Image (cartoon, rainbow, N blue to C red; front, side, top):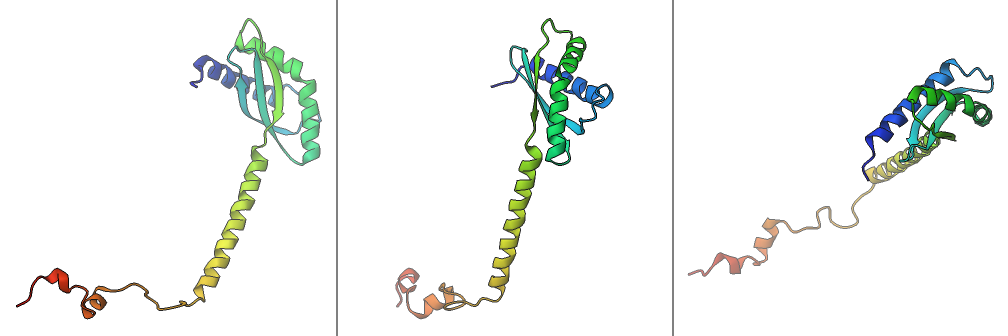
Length: 155
C-alpha cells in the first residue's frame, strides 16, 4: 500500500517537534537520554504513535516512560500549534525494540562466526575418507575403452 505523502510529512514534522520539545522544553528529571526513532500517523491523521529509545538500563527506561506519559499533554499542544491541523492527533509513546533486536542479532552472528571457525579448524586437520579425487579424469576413461564408440570405425 502506498503511503500518503501528507501522512509522511506530518509524521516527520511531529518527530521534529517532539525531539525539540524533549531537548529544550521538558525539564523532568526522570527523563533520560531519549531519542525519537520513528513516528507513525494513521491515515485519518487522528493518532500518532511515537517510538523512542532510552540510553541506559531498565530503570532509566521506566522512569523515562513515566516522564513521557506525564508530559504528553504539553507535547500534544505544541504539536497542534506547530502543525496547524484542525484536530491535533492523539499521541502514544512506545519504547522502540530496535536496540534489543540489534543486540540479539549481533549475538547470533557472533555465535555463527564461532561455529564457522570451529568447523574450519576441524576441516583443516581432516583427511579424505577415500581417494583424494573420486571423479574419473578424461585420461582414465580412454584407458578402459569407454570412448571407442565415439571415435568412429577403425580400419
